[in-house]
Amino acid sequence: MRVDDEAGTICVSLSEGGVWVCLWDAGRVVRYDADGAVTRVVVTPCSRPTSCCFGGAGGGAGGAGGAGGAFATTLFITSCSVVDRTREGWDPTANDGADSLAAAAAAAEEPLAGGVFAVEAGVPGVPVHKASF
Image 1 (cartoon, rainbow, N blue to C red):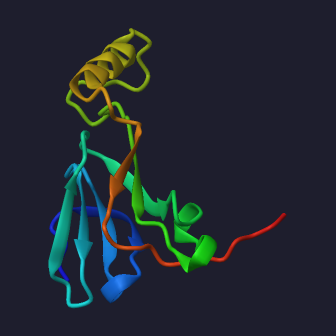
Image 2 (cartoon, helix red, strand yellow):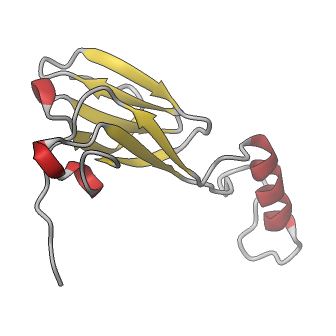
């Protein structure tokens, strides 16, 4: 399997051993099957998805089995809202409000960045062990 964009975290779906990979700066989460073929692409409303997991009805967080052995099929995707500190002219020692202006510009460009999104994946997540503290 080859991933051309910078991969973030992954989670595993129960059927066919597929993996879901968050692609940082690509604005999407991609599902690969056991042979490495792309079987689904979820486009996110922001450029930086960070992590994904299964949860919701039919199972607990991470796809834990619910009543009757059903597993969650909702894929939750977290995202990042980050000021681009690599831009030309950015000075980390300056206290001139430029960072605040950059944050406002980034928020205007991607108002949903930093949010959590839910997608019906159509496949169940892998069950996880529940922990008690």
